[in-house]
Image (tube, rainbow, N blue to C red; front, top):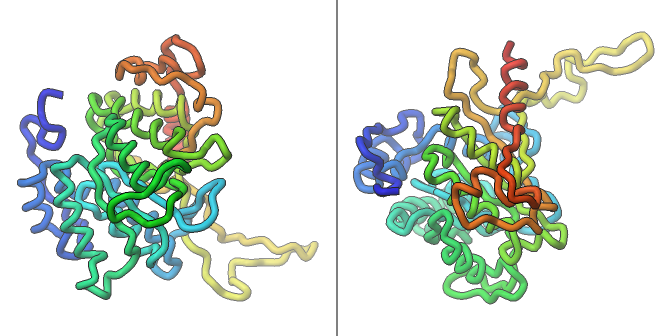
Length: 346
C-alpha cells in the first residue's frame, strides 16, 4: 500500500451522526479524530451493530435476543480474554468493558499511531476518575498491525496466551490466559488489507496464541457492512476456507409473563406460542438498502491447524495452502448466506 491505510487518497468522510455514546464518540469528537487519525477516527456503522450485540449481555438494556448470545464461546471456562483488531475510536472495546463489569481482559489494538486515540477514549470510560463508567478494569491498548507477526507474538507473550509465556509490563500477573474471543468491527473494506487481516486472524487462532490443539477455540466475531460486494467477496471466499462462520440471529424478546397471552392450548392439551417471532440474521435486512450489515461468528477449522500458510498475500487470498493443497480455491459460504437472506426478505 503506497499510502497510509487511514488516509486513503481523496479521503472525504464525515462523523457518524447516530453515535451518541458520550463525548468521546460524539460528532465533535469524531470530527477532530478524523482530522488527526483519518478513517480510524470515525465511528463506523458495523461498529454500532457490534455494540448492540454486546449490549445484549444486559437483558434489561435491549429488546432483542441473540443466537448465539455474546460472549458465549466454545471450550473455555472462566473469565474471557478478548482481542479487538482495528479498534479505531475504541467504542466497541468501551462497550465490552462496561458489560463485563470487572471480569475478563480486553485488549484493544490498532496501528501504533492510532493507539493514543484509543488510550484517551478508553481511559475516559474505564479510568478511576469517572466512577460511573467503571467496568472492566483490565483494559489494555497495544499496537497490532495486521500481518505483523511480531506485534501479535509480543501480545501473546505479555498476556500469557501460551502456556510457556510469562507476563510482562502492566498486564495481569497470571502466567496463563486463554484467548476466548477475537473481535472485528467494520474491517473488510480495502482489498490490499484482506490478506494481512486474514493472516492475523489465522495467527491468533493458531498455536502458541491459542491452545486450540487441546480443544479450546477462540470465537471470532465480525461485524461487516457491505459497501462494494464485488471487491469484498474475495475476503470471505478465503476466510471461509480457514474458518466456519454463521450469521448471528436475532428476534424480539418475548414478554416476561407467567402465562403469556400468545400461548394457546390445543385439543390435545399441548401448548403453542402462536406469536413467537422467528429468528432472522441480525443487521439491516431492508431490501431497499443495498449496503446491508451483518454480524458473523466464526471458529477455526480444526483440520486447518496443520495446513501450510502461504507467504504470499495473493496466494493466501487465492486459497493456496487451504485444504492441504497448493491449488487455488474458494469457499462459497458467504454467497450461500447472502442467498438465504435474500430469500428471507422476499
